[in-house]
Structures are given as structure tokens and as C-alpha cells.
Length: 119
Length: 106
Image 1 (cartoon, helix red, strand yellow):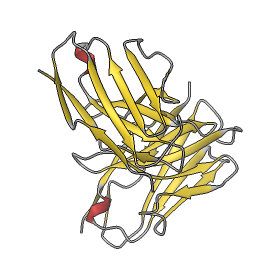
Image 2 (cartoon, rainbow over the protein chains, first blue to last red):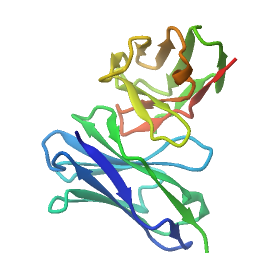
Image 3 (tube, helix red, strand yellow):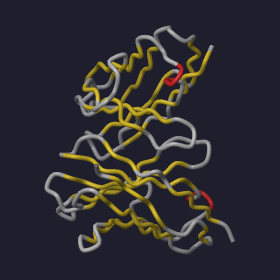
Image 4 (tube, each protein chain N blue to C red):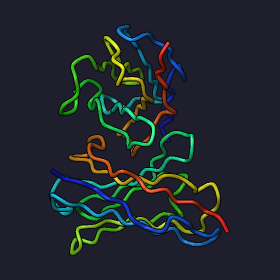
């Protein structure tokens, strides 16, 4: 069945760019009707939606993060990625990637990866 | 941005009892509402989408209802594995999560 796995540095310095990749296995990232998203969770807090990218390549972002986030697809590697610029300690969180189908809820999630922003 | 408000923040329930969780949207989200369960150290798991449709493999003791701005997740008879944090999420206009309700053992 479809599985998602996040990867990337666990430690990022303030003001630098956070880069994460989600590798999709057991299915094609470019299948019609799928969309792919990033969600984060600061330690001890709730879930925050970051953004989504559709199989067509269209992207949509949370208004609170929009100017700093960029999500892209790499169909050759069956991966999608998140870049978050100008990070601060407030960006410290577990970052999850997830899949949705036909603009419905996120039905499959990765296990999450912890990213700490610190000098 | 649509704001999702969940209540209560914490719900203390005895095993076997019924739990009722609420979620309110700041504007109508139609039936584009999902519920997730999250246990410590784990990723969220989809329970309900479309406000009332159980995801694959979800036991029928979980049920969802509501539309527009008011939604409810009911767990008919709490099992030990149901003690967790529950989040609602709207996907009518972009995506927004509620702040969560922790269901703890009474």
C-alpha cells in the first residue's frame, strides 16, 4: 500500500532555509486526483497546515506561512518537497507529509520528522 | 481564514462510557470536515471524512455528524485504545485544524 517517508536535516540555523523531502512508495505521485501536503506540529502543541500541491502542480499555502513556503513535485523520483525560508525558533516542529484524494481529507500520513531551529 | 474551535479541551471519560467531542467552524464548511486521532509519538490517523463517513478500518463505535458550522464526533463506548487527542479539520477552503481535544481516562 502507499507509504510516505519524510527526510531532511534535523537541525537548521535561524534565518536559513529548511528543506524536507517526502518519498512516496507503493503508488505514483502524479496519479490523477491526488494531492500532497505538509503539516507541522510544534512540541506539545496542535497541528498546523502548511500547504498542498496537486498532481497538476498547483500549490496553495497557509496565509500565515505563504510568503516563506514553497512545495514542489519531483515525478522522476516520486517525491515532493518543502522549502521554508528565514526560519526562526517558532518553526521548530515535527513536520508531516500526507496525501489526499479528490480534494478530500488527508488519508495517508508519513511518520513525521523533527526539525529544530537553533544556532 | 476559517477558524476551527474544538470543545472541550480535555474530556475525562471512563472506559465503556460515551464521549462527545464538538467542533465549530467560523464560517460554513459544508460537509468538508474530517476528524483525526493522534496518539503520543504517532502521526494522526484519519477517522472520519465528509463529516460522517468512516475511513477504512475505523470501528463503528466512531461516528460523526453535522454540517455547516457545527460538528460532533461521538465515540459510543470508549475502549482503552481510544484515549488520545482528536483533531477536526476543514478542507472546504484550503485547510485548517482545530486545536484538539484530549480524551483522558477518568
